[in-house]
Length: 179
Image (tube, rainbow, N blue to C red):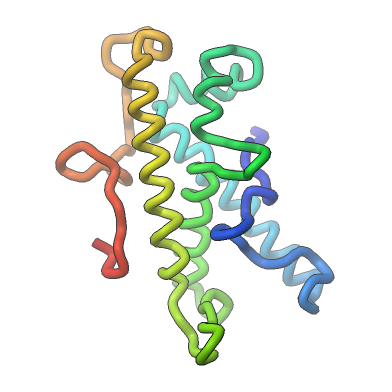
């Protein structure tokens, strides 16, 4: 299945390895990174959208996102192809770097510009995750306000929502301590 997110969404705070030929990176290394990113997009985009919509609405959304007005409207909460803002890309970025930060090697440590000391990628992950939480809250509020437009059944199924839901039922933020 084709994804909505592509590698062009990974800019600014979500910046990943440079394109081939930039900064002297060998083409093979960049291709490997791009393949890895593609794998993460293919895995985490549908997972994220299913967490928000459930399986049934996810299927409706994917088939009607460019043709059905209600899904075009919802799509604006998930993706902005002009500015490349996307809570879906934020979610993918988080898991991409979380995986990279626990992989053997030294490719994910950031360098402090002044002291040239290594710092954890966590300083990049937390703001991206928290922005994603804000966007999820907006999307859920939108779905709630327009419940009858999106849901034909009495109670939607949010399988797997434990990733976001805290005991009080709201998506949760992160801090440097992982709490």
